[in-house]
Image (cartoon, rainbow, N blue to C red; front, side):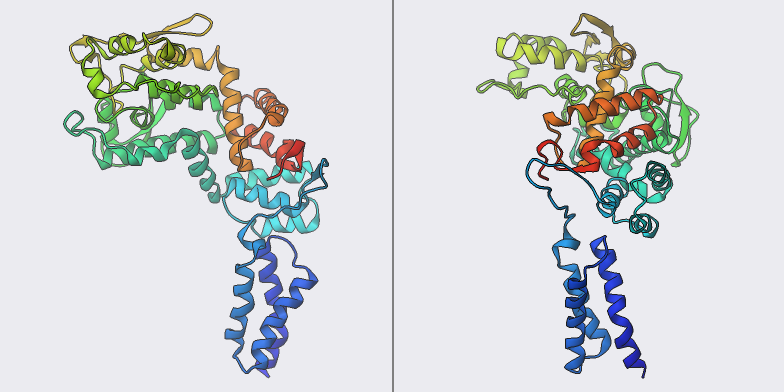
Amino acid sequence: AEVMAADEKLPDAIARFATRAFRRPVSDEDRARLTALYQDGRQRGVAPRESLAVPMMAVLTTPQFLFRLETDPAEGEVRELDNFELATRLSYFLWSSMPDETLFAHALNGDLAQPETLELEIKRMMDDEKSVAMLDNFISQWLQLRSLKKLAPDPGRYPTFDESLREAMLTETRMFATSIIREDRSVLEFLDADYTFVNEKLAKHYGMTDVSGDEFRRVSLNDPRRGGVLTQASILTLTSNPTRTSPVKRGKWIMENMLGTPPPPPPPGVQLLSEESEAELLGSLRERMEQHRSNPACAVCHEKMDSLGFGFENFDAVGAWQELDGKFAIDPSGTLPGNQQFRGPAELRQILKNQRRDQFLRCVSEKMLTYALGRELQSYDRCAVDAIVRELTANDFRFSALVKAVVSSEPFRKRGFRGETQ
């Protein structure tokens, strides 16, 4: 009798499992096919548990489970995502995982796309611990933090750098980003902020006192030399060479990740500044690079990149403060396009935060939309980015406004948007 009862109940259980795995209600055709797989085993005398494994394995090997499938509209047409597609996009954007029961219930009820419901769901999901996946994945992708794990600064030149300092650097940036996201702070704090997170090891690396122990804690920054991710050791280290700083890498990183204006690749045949050729040049690193930049093919791009990077030359290759480059005094001055002059990291951060604010907002909006869609942006996405920047500006630049604006954007909510095929 128990076996017969199990045989009667299991088709419903299989359908429920398939519904969750497919992230939408299972079709009658799929239900019948999966039930037949179970019944075939039972008719051959296979026990219920073993028979159940066959349709479950079938579910887990289907394209509906393995991929996020969305039906393309007719060529040249655009359609709104249905509630189940929207739930899936939303959950993988914010959680990097499938929809939970609450989100799925809204999709079943057909009310997920309603503005009030969607806003409440975004807040609930951002408050959930699972949103740490978005923090880790988006922040690491945007700021290129994973590159730090591959770097090996020269131990002879930087003996204080070890694995515990590397982890402390990463923890600082992650906790800093978490505070902006969890406390719904302004995204402009990525450029400049009056606080950070340190433990004793990182505080000592920064020249801070009165911090002891391995536990990280929030500290106020009274020194204008530091503030925001640009002066955190993680970013300063991953944009350096093993044996020295790299104004080129630092400038390029800022152009790509803060200003959204990546430089073009170097022209064919242009020689990079190797350690051997660098040794033949004289003076400070800045002076040696200026000699290298005398090549007209290098000058156009390097004037922009190097000038940004020189603003952070007071930070060595592992992010500690330095006054000298060997025996030479460091010159951290530069000029941005538009004749915006600065001297040192504090002045450069203020220019980026104030005069270049709109450029940064557009860059972070593009980075977030790219992450949410899982594809590179195209020219037809420009209007959507414009709308995201307007919403972000109208809501005091808060991180929640960025997320809501991305979710409300046409590329996120529609399929086939201006030629979209992915």
